[in-house]
Length: 241
Ligand code: ZN
Picture (cartoon, rainbow, N blue to C red):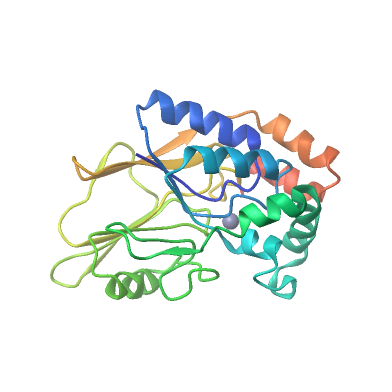
């Protein structure tokens, strides 16, 4: 199956990723949240991912658009994009977005947009945060998103932590212990690689493979500029930051 996160209303990146998912032979998609915000095509991305995914979380941007989290907590750029997205989605789109929760804990493979203790806002970047997230969950595998950085951590059976950043290429075996995996961002990568980031998870082989997919960045940038969204949101896509 394919794990997608932080699509951020980037239609071009989502379409290219869905093609790559099909080519990889993955029939099932799980989405770890932030379907909208920053990009120019929130309605398309929301309806497409809801039609295609078996599980789909809402992230801080999605909850900002629905009003479940206050606009005051967003940085200026993000807030401008949230306000624009509210208008673009309209009442029906906002209502659809309200169905999404930032946490899906009661699954064999739990998912949280941020982290188990703070599904909306925590950015898991440091190994000690990963440890706390893994100690919180007695599960072999948990997916998170939110940081836009592909990453993986392992809590070994003897209590040591392993960090896998940058992530390996090729299938990574989910060895004994507990794993916390972030597939990175489809629609706004921030690891200085402009390509869409996502992951393949094979439950039978017990592997995760981090993937990158090129897409039409210029078209996504033009859509952002034409929509009147802040131009920095267009420019950063080319740099992957
Ligand atoms: Zn995000």
